[in-house]
Amino acid sequence: MDKFVIRGGNPLVGVIRVSGAKNSALPCMAAAILTEDEVTLENIPQVRDIETERKLLQSMGAEVGLREGEAQDRTTICCRNLSDPVARYEIVKTMRASSLVLGPLIARTGMARVAMPGGCAIGGRPIDLHIRGLEKMGATITQEHGYLEARADRLRGAHLVFDKITVTGTEDLLMAAVLAEGETLMEKCAREPEVTDLAALLTAMGAQIEGAGTSTIRVQGVSRLHGARHSINPDRIEAGTFLVAGAITGGDLVVSNCNPTHLGAVIAKLREAGAIVDVLGPDEVRVRSGGPLRAADISTEEYPGFPTDMQAQYMALATQAEGVSMVRENIFENRFMHVQELVRMGANIKVDGSVATVRGPARLSAAAVMCSDLRASASLVLGALVADGESILDRVYHMDRGYERIEEKLRGVGAQIRRLGNLFPPREDE
Ligand code: EPZ
Image 1 (cartoon, rainbow, N blue to C red):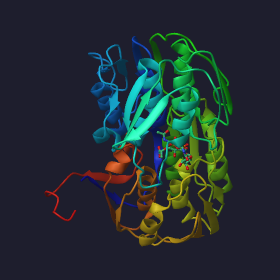
Image 2 (image 1 turned 90 degrees about the horizontal axis):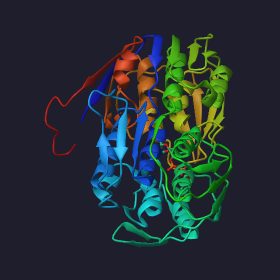
Image 3 (image 1 turned 180 degrees about the vertical axis):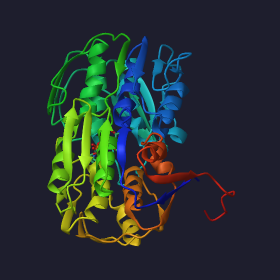
Image 4 (image 1 turned 120 degrees about the vertical axis):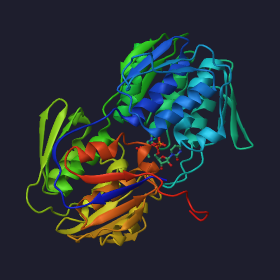
């Protein structure tokens, strides 16, 4: 298993480029199931979850790949021959976002067999809201042997009101609705930019959608969709992670190829914590040290509130801020896996239920730490960038799921970070 070695102490200075958003690319790739024509997606991040989704679509009979000579960040998907509409457990267990193929498969083929996505480090991750919505649209869904079996002659438009705001639930049911018979009204939808990005692709494919990005989405079903070409949104969480990296190291960092309008809550919070953050243009944000960092509380919320996917990264910053920062995690039930590892580096953090109390500034010292999930990994990288000495981060495959070439990008702005492949074969107990 790959490791990172990081020597802390260098302020990050220069320009760091953001890749396409993994959480936009995943639903947009699934949307290709809805048509027999080719769908070409650009600005796709080269990360593990994308590779997993490519394998998933290919396992169903789709042709997925790069055209000869095409840029690495482009992928063309053709689902003309969906010979085997099954999402197998071997693939789903490595990436639970596979539930995103459920709606499109039923809408396109009238059937789907999708392994139930297990939970993950951050929570149980149920998909009951996806299932309930599809049943309201006329699907018959049974569960056996760990698989969901879904059938529908043709989905019917329905009035759907989500009990809880769910990002992939909104995306899954939006993809089901675009080919359903009649009108679908969806209320209490997720407003994340990833939903809006998916709706832009679906509209380019011929879907009739109003209200994407608001909590009420209205869809007029159509009989078929055609191919399209679409460029994926920049990754707002990667951008936010880099802004925190510039602030925590006291550097002067320009984050390029991002979308500042998706970063409102993060930029406001970094300013409150004492960083100088300037929006330089439609795709660039600059972060600089504004003197000692100050404690500031966060409470994670659905978009446009402070993102749960930035909670762990912000907590690393809070360990260096003067005062007491309260970090409240409202979305997932177990998203403090980074806390104990930051404490091992010297952070002063106490957890009580869904609230972590962070006292700073705490001098961090390098340590051997363990990555547990995608964003916790990012938090440990940020801690190691300011810790005294050389930290070793194990199980960085968690980070590779959602951050493209992260060590190259950070090294490019002055970080002392190296990736260590397997020096020796893993021991039995590893
Ligand atoms: C998406 O996950 C993202 N993943 C997550 O990013 C992100 O943390 C999350 O949205 C919240 O913003 C992708 O887009 C691939 P939810 P999703 O459904 O859709 C509960 C990352 O780090 N819920 O919005 O699975 C659920 O348990 C990942 O990139 C139900 O109860 O999250 C949670 O408490 C991690 N029943 C809350 O809703 C359901 O049917 C929000 O979950 C669905 C969700």
